[in-house]
Image (cartoon, rainbow, N blue to C red):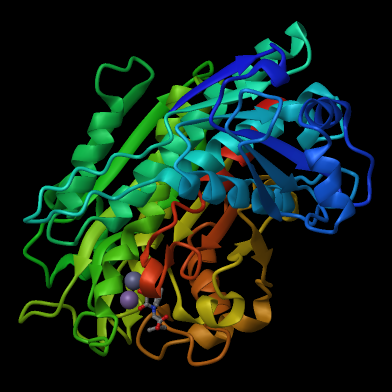
Length: 500
Ligand code: BES
Ligand code: MN
Ligand code: ZN
């Protein structure tokens, strides 16, 4: 998609579509009024008749408007003043993107001053960035391998943002670049998630990480083999890989955008490329969806790529423990006891609680980098889907400041999280008679006890855990990876840069 900026007159625009925002119960903005006058009051008439009320996300077409060369006008409800941000803004933009895609328009002009009442540069920046992200993600397409070699040709090719003065042009151009870099990161995460488990293996994830670092001075990628992990003593991670023919990998990617002495932010992503449950085998229904069990890893790679593209002035380390979880004669059995990299021993009571086993060794490994903070992202518990559904990811943290920052980044990006407690009272659920801890905490508070388990490996760190079990993919006819929480993570990084 081609995104550009213009400040030329709207009533002269020859575009296929002009997108014009309408605020509920407000007078037309001056740009909307110009369009209205040029088209014989076509907009005001629709509003007066009650055909368009300006409700958030409401869309209304005006086809072949008279008096202007543009082919269509799309009225877009922006809700009540003040102009929406966060989730609400996303809703409006998604509605416009969907209508635009359906219409067959090849290009469109977005009249920025009709979408926001605020003139502050950061408001405009945010709006343009979110518009780019939303349009790109609406047009996202996963190329299905098929006998019919149908090539999909999206009609929409070009979006132009109309600004009112020249000064705004630069700001809008910066916002377009930012939006594109984020959209590319989200797309990467979605495609990695959507790829089948027989292609997207641990080795494939390692190759993708290396690709992000190829010919980039600021990015270095290292991949540890099972042998190297064994030498280090990563008994928990390796216990999950035992049933698989695919060798496990520990991927470590450094992005250096700031001086060496600056402490890095570490992102750890769960990379189980297929989770059958292992010997504690899952039921067959929907088991295919467990190819998405590497979406945490995918989001970390997407975020890494975006940080690289935006040349963010900070240091970032991505750590991805990658493996399959399969049953086999050599697979780990319930009751087996393993020793983690931290030295703590674990009784594996359920081989399906494998995510925490690979994450705990990755989290201990992360300590050596003396991070400013560690955030892990994982499709960790079915309980999180029960608790929060798909609208919010679960957030658990040992640091109120970090948790607050992530909650806020979620609101700003529209990619939200919701905090659950990590109180000591839950810890005894992990007690074991045969090791320092068991790997499951019983039927109650499954998302919390999973995080309690991880907290035992991050005692010395500022740490947050994001459970994306509900958010990472859609089910049913829209089955597919969402790319979450790339936009949340990038927003968090942008906020860190801003407040440095
Ligand atoms: N990958 C699953 C969690 C999951 C399940 C994510 C369904 C999304 C949808 C994880 O490895 C798992 O199997 N967790 C178990 C933990 C239990 C055995 C304590 C679960 O949630 O059932
Ligand atoms: Mn599992
Ligand atoms: Zn899993």
